Length: 169
Image (cartoon, rainbow, N blue to C red):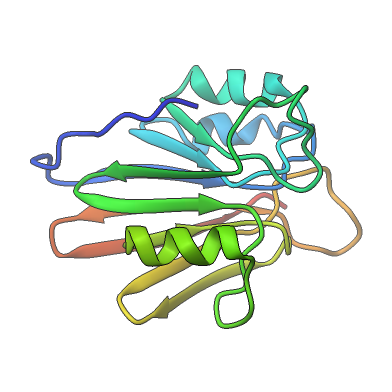
C-alpha cells in the first residue's frame, strides 16, 4: 500500500499483479511473487491480512474494489505509481474499449499512464490501446467452478514490458 518510485536504471524490474482475492490467499502466490520489486493489487482484496502477506515479499500498492469497505480496507479507489520509469494507474472497474466512470476517465487523461491495471471481471486481459497497456491479471480468489484463476508478472525492460500470466489452477 506504499507508493515507492523504484530506480529505473536497473536492467529490469518484476512487478507482481493480482486482483479479486476476495479474502482468500493462495499460498503458491508467495513463490510466484518471490523476487518481485513491487506488487499491485487491483481491488476486491477482502481483508487487510492479504495485503500484509504480500507486503512480506515487496512493497504493495492496492486499491479498493466494489466489494471492499473502506472501514475494512483503507485504500484509495484509484492509485498512480511510477515503477521502472513507467507510470501505472490502478483502478478496479475498467472497460478497456468502452464506457468508464468519470473518476477513471479524468485521471486517465490527466496521467497518460503506460499501464492500466484493473480487475473486477475475473477474466485475464492484456490489450494495447494506443500506447497504453490494459492489464487484468484475472482473479486469485477461492476456486469457483471451471473459472480459471490467475495472477500476472510484468517484466519492465528498457525496450518494453513483458507480461506473463500464471495459472493458479
